[in-house]
Image 1: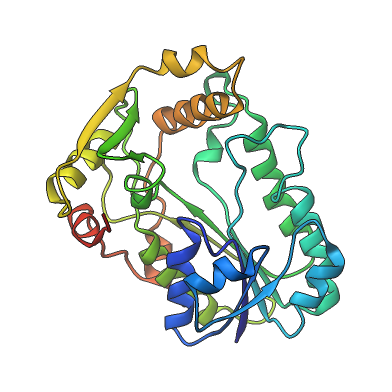
Image 2: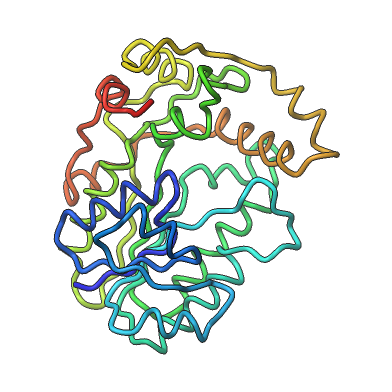
Length: 289
């Protein structure tokens, strides 16, 4: 099976791409920065491609069976900007049809369901919901994954030097999952997918824990020095919203993460794709400095 990956260099893209490679698929990574991507995946095919260019995507998708999309909206993007999950996805679907791609796979989000709850309305979640609609309406068979929070964010987007930054306190308990476990599940999904079959899976980890519990357990098991948890009140981020797109993004995503009433929905996922095995302690012990 020939699989193209778009978005392989990010926090979630790297471990997932590595799992596809380890599984023995013929992986082609499509990237704008080919030298940087080759430095991360030196033994993998890397070709130039940009979601702004349909013509370039058509060339880069030739001979591909499945294209996997790990897209995101950056914290400094504005509503009126070009978005990979909007205009970029429209271009990708057109190119995939032209190239004869047989399956589109997309990493979505379970948290986007918070849209409309408690009066919450955010254009970013509108984009993400529209992305799912576009893929389903494309006519190309699809595999869409809806993950809970990733453990990787604790040592990634929430890590600043020796600090793990948390915004506010919440009693909700997401089912944190490690990206490499998700990658293994995705591999299994591709292996069992029948021609023309559509797949949708909720991705959740082995246990439900609050954000502070995850951080505390991560810090206790981390092997590369002492880390500290720094909790800031949400109103500080809210004050910066009129002046900073990044602050506005941070406030909205924190509001959703701290309030979405997640329940366990991954029973069928575990039956079909296997149960995630990485605990918070194991993830911390295997994390890099």
